[in-house]
Image 1 (tube, rainbow, N blue to C red):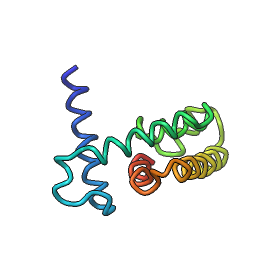
Image 2 (cartoon, rainbow, N blue to C red; image 1 turned 180 degrees about the vertical axis):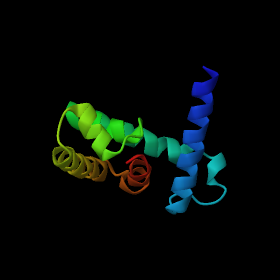
Image 3 (cartoon, rainbow, N blue to C red; image 1 turned 135 degrees about the vertical axis):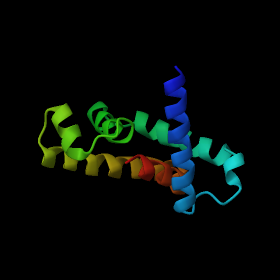
Length: 114
């Protein structure tokens, strides 16, 4: 349980650093997590709207940290197939986020994940 807590903290700190590097989080905004939480909620809602196989690929890459070759092997498909699925999943996520109005901040959150 402690190891999970430590890993969560490392991922959270990495996300804050990535958002700051992308210009989506201004210095000092780290203490106010409202924008990060909003972006995370919109990203998770958009992920939930993806087809199951697309969501699985995105999560293998984002959450498990696999590269595209490893994810393709885990899914039992070829690398070009996985690459095309990822391309389509990103397009769908972009469209879902644009429709949602949370596009800018949430794209940065998802960009860090993928």
